[in-house]
Image (cartoon, rainbow, N blue to C red; front, top):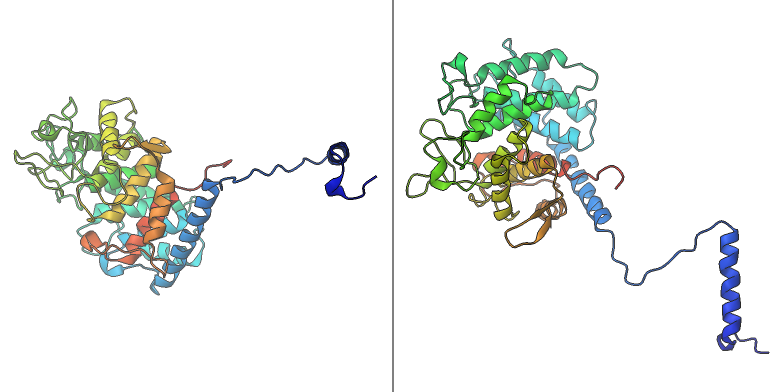
Length: 388
């Protein structure tokens, strides 16, 4: 009888294999199955990449904070509010020294009228709306209830409505600008809706419904909600900057005076409509989503090239997370896992010190503090879901 296992008869191998499997099962163990050429779990790999990118960015911002708790204070308190919100959504607690110092700095800009803005600021709605979102994020124990109530009252007062002498037929009605006497625009109105949404205001809130009227009029979609002179000229479902004061699009005009749609405003418009209670079956939402599918990209802010690129990434992520789709089918028919693509794209653009910066400095995107905060906020919508 041979003693060389390699030359043993097949009956011997079968007997030994059966005995081993039986022993494993009796021991209550499950045999490990090894699959050849098994593909790595892309979700796990992407989550690990996201975590490393976020960690590096948080460390950069820790080092970038000024002694008084601010970030880029020369641009007003708005950037500090954005950074603090981004840090909290990246896992830092309100009591973390960096966040706590930022909150203390913002409180120094609280005014008797309830607004949170820089002295003599032209950007009162913008800065207060961003601060509302920030303090609400930090309001774990009701510490900021009074502050938030006063700030909410302030931004509602700044809204263009009957109290500002506006009739509902006015192209300014329902919108928000940098200040109560500044022309309203979709970006500021989007910040207002974000602020109200953060404190639990929805479709039953009058201010939200007024804002929805303005948002609808900034969409290139002729409908009962938009009979403006611009709606039919482009009519592609996208959004532009403002319908007020003769209308304006940062992407320019068509030869016949239409206002061209562009990416960041279309995502901001879509998200704002959902927050205001507009259903996914509504023609406005359908048209906006179709525009997004046709212009899906991370290479640019569609219609604007690299202008406002990181603001675009933020609104891109927020809107797609709000509508709840994990994948977007683009114009090429390809299904895009937008979170995976966004994480990989931002990882490729991150600087060695953990920051991001836009080589196009328009709209303050030459400031790495602001751009890094935008990037962290975008990534905050790509956290693994429970159970994944």
